[in-house]
Amino acid sequence: MSAVVKLHDIHKSFGTVEVLKGVSFEIDRGEVVAIIGRSGSGKSTALRCINRLETIQSGTLEVCGHRLDQPTLDLRALRQDVGMVFQSYNLFPHLTVEQNITLAPRRVKRLPNSQARALAQASLERVGLAEKIDCYPEQLSGGQQQRVAIARSLAMQPKVMLFDEVTSALDPQLTGEVLRVMETLAQGGMTMAVVTHEMTFARRVADRVIFMHQGRVWETGPGEMLENPQTPELQAFLSNGL
Ligand SMILES: Nc1ncnc2c1ncn2[C@@H]1O[C@H](COP(=O)(O)OP(=O)(O)OP(=O)(O)O)[C@@H](O)[C@H]1O
Image (tube, rainbow, N blue to C red; front, side, top):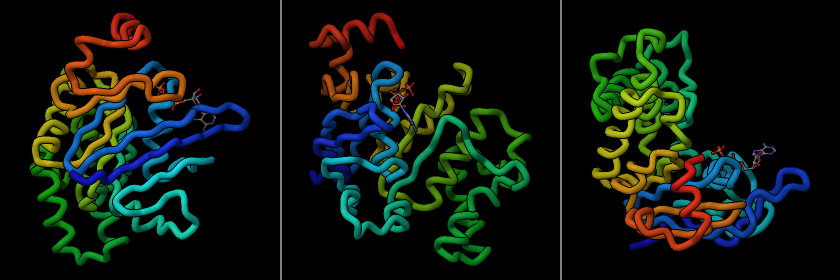
């Protein structure tokens, strides 16, 4: 298998505070990696580096063949290959579901209206919301809005998807419906990096779990490592939660 995401010895500081202290990991094509760890351990920052929402100070970083540590980076091409879904859905309230989903494909890929609508329909079917295509976000539950946000990302046909605590704002029932959509994507072969506090999801769905602690990859392994943590830090995290 070939790695589509390669981080090697990444260092990242905000001002004088170093939050990533030499982070290295790879994600293979079709692999699902869950990134777990305490608040402030650097999970979101590491994820955000992968699509260049954050720049790194040193290290090498390659995503879908794009060298993010090189000045020649084509940011637009990178962002087409890498989709990202956030905790806040960031849907435009004055646009319908279809308009939200087709905004980027129309602008970036210059798709004609009929093709864009078909793409929105297909993306919504993948998240189980085809019948909501003409709704406005306020007519949807939080879980449905998050699924629309996932559909919006899918419509750009990304090669890698990044999920940053996408269920943190949802109650347990709505969390479940979003996680099921993500599980279906995982089963369909999508390459995914998922920052999450959902340990059941990490254990069951992820091919590999990365435990970050104090800006470093502290422990990594298959989901079963959560049943048999090797370091006291992962043990403490699993018993105390956040
Ligand atoms: N834009 C920023 N400016 C300054 N400091 C930041 C910025 N973004 C993150 N940090 C700091 O970097 C550290 C790591 O933050 P990060 O969001 O990556 O952690 P996290 O593990 O994802 O935590 P959480 O689970 O709370 O989201 C924290 O101490 C945070 O305060």
